[in-house]
Image 1 (cartoon, rainbow, N blue to C red):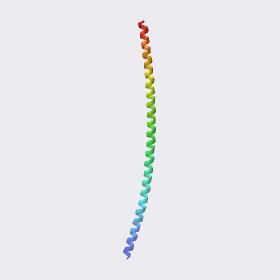
Image 2 (image 1 turned 90 degrees about the horizontal axis):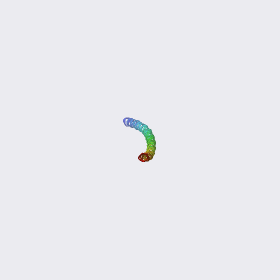
Image 3 (image 1 turned 120 degrees about the horizontal axis):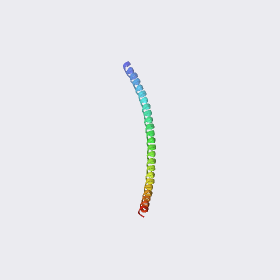
Image 4 (image 1 turned 60 degrees about the vertical axis):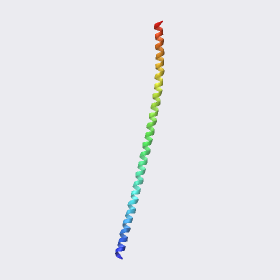
Length: 88
C-alpha cells in the first residue's frame, strides 16, 4: 500500500512538472509567434515602401524619356531648318 501511494505521489509530481513545462513551452511559442509576425509585418512594410520607391523612380524615368524624345524631335526640326537655310 505504501509503494502505491509513493508511486501516485511521484506520478503527481511528474505530471505537475509536465504541466509546468508545457505551460512554459506554450508561452515561449506564443512569444516566438508574436516576434515572427512582427518581423514579417515589418518586412512587408519595408517591401511595400521599396516597391513604392521603385514605382516612383519608374514614373520619373518615363517622364524623362518623354522629355528627351521632345528635345530630340525639336533638335531634329532645328537641324532640318538649318539644312534648308544652307541649301538656299
